[in-house]
Image (tube, rainbow, N blue to C red; front, side, top):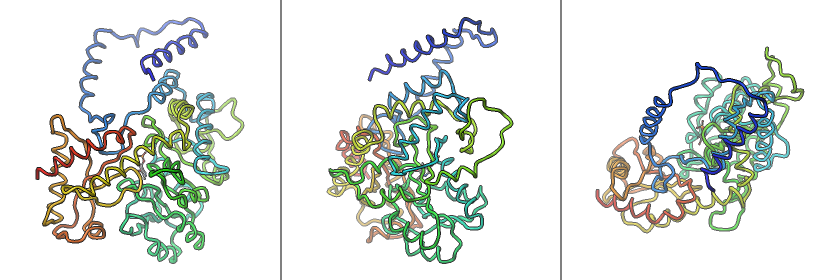
Length: 455
Ligand SMILES: *Cc1c(COP(=O)(O)O)cnc(C)c1O
């Protein structure tokens, strides 16, 4: 896709549309000296070089990558008009697009009816899900796994809800025996299950947990901010296939959150919350002193906590979904490539003398550490940190990784024969969320092996 061409088209189409409203004069107060601008623009471009190459497959660190060109074109087209999706009258076109993309996301999770909308982030989307949880069970708390995103603890604090962490098993999934013990106390109104934890990409046992929760009259919210789009790999053919049961169960859970700005190829500012029961919209109702002249159905501002939101985000996601829809053959192929890359790298590490796999990847996140014999937790911590730092400095063979802190307990659940001389350790972590990682994975592996062998 020729991005320059389409960005030019966006600007000229916008001008044509603007011209239909007749001529007017711009005010002097906003006119600027083009020479000052050139200088500042140069400075901006220069300062932006202080970044990591998120676009390049040698960047195999955090969950970061640039948006798809279609999303950039869609975002700019929306942004030039700058509609506000807090209400239909803030921008009828992008409000309608938001409803359409939310419908596609609901369909992806198998919801046959839904109430939902885009949000600025996964955090806000989870806040809304737990706000509804509180309205439905005002005197009961929230359970989430120890490996759940830190946002849940924070949101519970914000909403004045009791937050109850539940221990995880040796694969980083919520331990259902511990959950049941907690449910028996009657203190829990809603259980948060994570479909793809941010650290390891582990999937909580959603299928079995839902059965358990219904026995104790507890609601279930699924945090699939990072992992949600992997539902497109459930039951598909090929090595990237994921077991269906947990993903299919999401359709019977009470709410789900997914971040199109993580695995949906979008720029930041795009999360989504979906509720299975549309009547929860009643908890959002509020009187606004501003009148809207065309909306008689519930508008977006009446079913969301945020007020102003970028209509451009809806335009970007809408245009992306036209060409890469959230289906197995569309976005599914993008996620499949990242998952195959993670599986391939895991196999290479298993055959390596210099690296050890922390655990098998469930999605596209790989965790590993430098092999040392004899080994201790403090040595693994030191060496992981060294490989992480040296990788970025290495000329011609640079590689950008991330580190993950794990407890001594987490570590010994997976690996014996390592001296536990510390409370925890950093290990190496790579999110392979770019499909290009599949092509680059051998090179990534050899660069990291070279660094690990230097210790
Ligand atoms: C990223 C993430 C969040 C937070 O979402 P933001 O969009 O960063 O606010 C919540 N839960 C999980 C599982 C995540 O991976």
